[in-house]
Figure 1: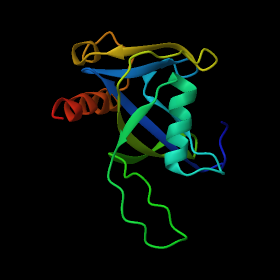
Figure 2: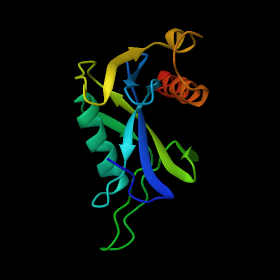
Figure 3: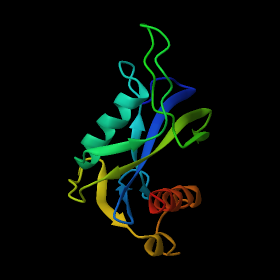
Length: 153
């Protein structure tokens, strides 16, 4: 989806783990390995956005991890609390407020979203630590954290 606002957009990302490997996509436009994710559309909440992005970009069915508060009223919907929240500059004055989630998949059978990605791959911790891997430092850190998180479960 294109940017909704000229200054800031709400985005979601999810590090999906399966048997000590984390799923990453090779993004065509950005030329780097990233987790599944994207913009939250105007007609959806963050839980709906992350579910849509996972289906569109991998075809997986996953269990999203994070706490949820109790429903406080008939007009409220408790949402999954992310593992991390950050804001980062995209270009010029435009920024993304990103909610980062962790999820676990019982399956490693994925489908490539070839319009958006060059490749989709499961990475071990050792592979993520390779200096030859085209991955941003903070993405590597979050991916390794996801592996540690599920290694304790």
